[in-house]
Length: 201
Ligand SMILES: Cc1cc2nc3c(=O)[nH]c(=O)nc-3n(C[C@H](O)[C@H](O)[C@H](O)COP(=O)(O)O)c2cc1C
Image 1 (cartoon, rainbow, N blue to C red):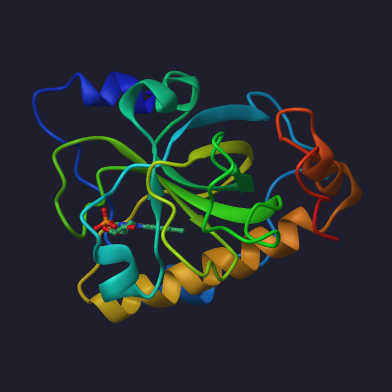
Image 2: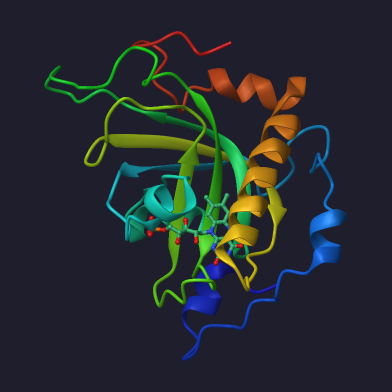
């Protein structure tokens, strides 16, 4: 298996398989073993960067991007694809924050690692969609994430609607997969800052 970092060294982006109706109708609703297995858990941390902004506007799924150096812990050991886990946006250190107490809890997340074949990006990115309704943007804030499992490969799509539909399934699969005791306990992992919040139940 080639890691995302190895694929990023190739002169051309690898072709992604096309999503098919059969893939959509046969997707499992829960993935991974009953407890995270190597290489998981993978810890990621860094300041949230702006992507192209299409996630929120076009897909109804805003994503928080991490800088290149922050994605090495996963890109150097794992393949491209969609992953699940937990993430937390941290309050700014100067105490001035637009985020409310609910925003800075540990929340479930889905993450896309790759080149977004549908949009034909040239640069490898890790985009995290946190499953929580934030009241404001949080660009520039620090984010911690724990990746606990793999959902599916990155796919190419013939329509935006099909991509949106698959992302909705990804979110359900992530919640089902996290809803197991050996995954839930990572919500209280020391990687997260639990001093400023009580982990959401
Ligand atoms: C859970 C999840 C799954 C995704 N799966 C794919 C995929 O299979 N293929 C793809 O081209 N892009 C996929 N994307 C990436 C979206 O295309 C991406 O978030 C979108 O391009 C918005 O990026 P932007 O905010 O940088 O514009 C996925 C994103 C998320 C959050």
